[in-house]
Image (cartoon, helix red, strand yellow):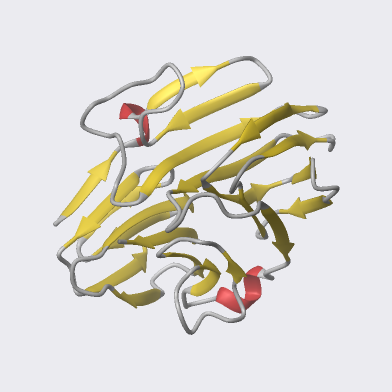
Length: 232
């Protein structure tokens, strides 16, 4: 089963400095049909104006992944971590027993990010944060695992969830495949471009909810960047 959720039908909020689209219920947007997808709880498509951002605020017991699509994001938290994550790279935060953090766009251009929350396997663990560069060239024509709590993904940033985040960059006509195990779900969004997923077409920003498909074959109808989450 493949369901396309068009960008134009997602939840939305525009605060001036922040323009967001919500794939799942979040903040003031509530849709009882879209509370989560398996353990995937949040997928927000955020555009953050230059020299603005999220001031310090708390989280707990959630795995939070930030995929930077354009520009850069600067992170600070109550553990003393600081870091700047640029386009194509990823940062992860295991909120655990509690963490306070800020995320700012200190650049002169709008930052575009996917903010993805996944419910952890276990609550009450110490908080943690990490960031790592993932050159886009490494994922040309194939899916590369960027963050994972699953076995065999030692090069990926660790998260404490039965989930995996991957990305691929595809030239027009190029394809990439991903095997989806039985009883697992996937959620896929083209950060840019236009794609076909097992014969179903999706445009940039559309959500693609997938279940009961053993293999995903993603074909680029134009130059595309694809982000995929595999969850229980």
